[in-house]
Amino acid sequence: MRVLVIGSGAREHALLLALRRDPEVDALAVAPGNAGTAAIAEQYEVDVTSGDDVVKLAKRFEADLVVVGPEVPLVLGVADAVRAAGIACFGPSKDAARIEGAKSFAKDVMDTAGVRTARSEIVDNPARLDAALDRFGPPAGDHAWVVKDDGLAAGKGVVVTVDRLAARAHAASLLDSGHPVLLESFLDGPEVSLFCVVDGETVVPLLPAQDFKRVGDGDAGPNTGGMGAYTPLPWLPADVLASIVDDVVKPVAAEMVARGCPFSGLLYAGLAITSRGPAVVEFNCRFGDPETQAVLALLESPFGQLLRAAAVGELAAQPALQWSGGAAVTVVLAAENYPGRPRVGDVITGSEASGVLHAGTARRDDGAVVSSGGRVLSVVGTGADLAAAREAAYAVMEGVRLPGGHFRTDIGLAAAEGRVVV
Ligand code: GLY
Image (tube, rainbow, N blue to C red; front, side, top):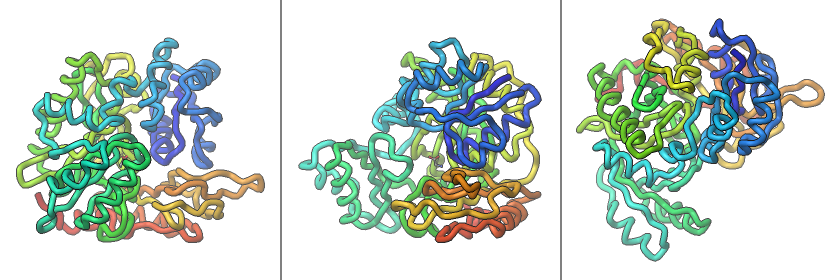
């Protein structure tokens, strides 16, 4: 099987490594990729937002399967274009990708499917902003305003704050740039990312993971695209996990079938485990980054065959997934000033080590690997338990050098110490 992966992050590096372990995968390409993926796949430049360009490349590479990593091409209909060209594609249609691309659509699907989520309100008129903020506050205890961009914003469109002025300023700046704002009630409790391979009403969950969205240790500082992750979640009871699949993901998948926009691809449920049970924070239409790097490190089943089965409507016939025991931890190394405008062009050393997955990296003419984005790379460690996986990940990070680079030192720490409770 010849597989073309679209995207350029550490998530795509992880997808390629997992695909390479599948004995049925005999050729890999990536577009546009990064300095790390160039070592394991043929690398092509492509405009990932252009269905025509992706189809041309898929034909040139004679791909049997195209796997679309990021949300932007999916929301723009790249998977539809690939399928229309007669090539199997892992990734939802433009219609189905609205589950991530239009949060108001996702809320409507969840309401109809009877899935618990935050109370929410769309504000598209600045004159209505103050009254709407009042309906979601004032905050009490650890409650907070949750202000989101209704469209795509790479995780950075979200501000969660107890400061009304900060909430108002973020909402006003979104409205100023023409983006409707989604106000939500705050969902209290530890967060879970559950990735499910979905093909219509067939739902195959992967291992649950937890993401760390704030930039600093102890959840300090602004939101990012994700600074680290670990899997599995020792504190998540098996019956709660089963109820996320049965009472959240399956009803949403069924509702999308009923609406004539069946989901085919990776449905990512982001949830908070509240005192009243799981509630959805958001759905995404693709693998999450950085959780994928940890989750796929533990997958033993042939990944290419799993994705192809979903892409061609044969997921229900797949054998149960096999996982290696133990745990995996991802830690993200970010560039100076991230999540603000990152400094780029710094030379990175040690990035060729095993366990390093590249994201914002490029190779200079003189051969040096340099930073080219905010999240520069991920390191992944595995071990018999979370403590061992953390130790392995941070040992890899020790060998990597990036001037001005920063990473969190507490990924998975509270869970390893038994301090996460539901
Ligand atoms: N881990 C957050 C995301 O992928 O959106």
